[in-house]
Image (cartoon, rainbow, N blue to C red; front, side):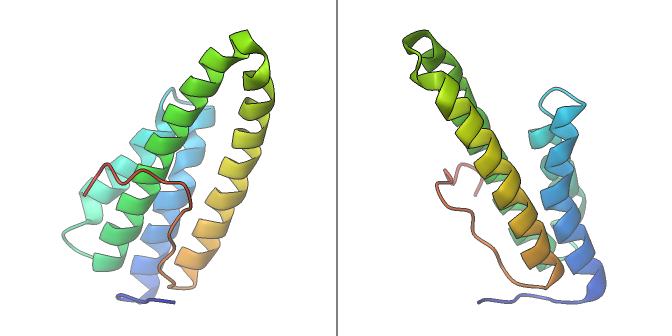
Length: 117
């Protein structure tokens, strides 16, 4: 496992970058806006937050794309199952990433499109 700067403040902000995606339950596209705001605010100050914020942002953009595709596939009936599976996978991986970030461990989400460099 890789570590960047593991001071308590950077671990807290990295964890919040992951957990801020839960704002998508309240705010449309909050799952993208939350990590984006934290990443933009702290990327120049803390390398760990820059890395994990970008990772959270890429993951949530990817999951949004996957959900949109699943929404289209609802017309072929397979999308209904995909939406439920994606929602559970999203939540589990989000919590796992937040825990790892709080431990100071660099976490990489699986199946993530690396759109933000």
